[in-house]
Length: 99
Image 1 (tube, rainbow, N blue to C red):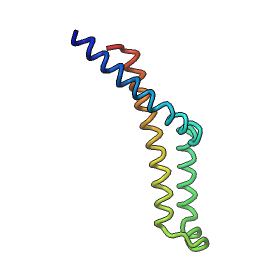
Image 2: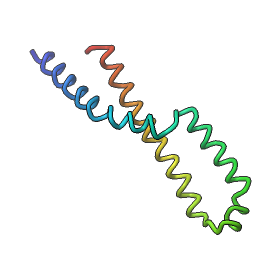
Image 3: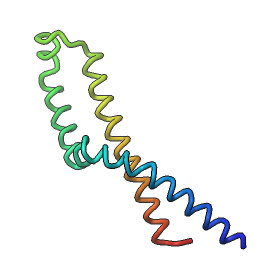
C-alpha cells in the first residue's frame, strides 16, 4: 500500500517535471547550441579575448566589467542547459528503474 502511494507520488512529480521542463527544453534546444558546440565556442571566445583583450578594451572602449559580464552570462546559460538536461536524464533513469 505504501509502495503504491510512493510510486504514485513519484509518477506525479515526474509528470509535472516533464510538463514544466518540455517547453523550457524546447526553447533551450532552439535558442542555444548543443553543449559540445557551446563549449567549443566558449573556448575559442575566451582564447580570442585573452589574445586581444587589451586591444579590444582600448579600441572599442569596453571595460573589463563588460567582458567579465559576457563571460559570466555565457557560463550561466551553459549551466542552465546542463542542469535541465541532467534533470531530464535523472527522470529518464528513474523511469527505466521503475522503483
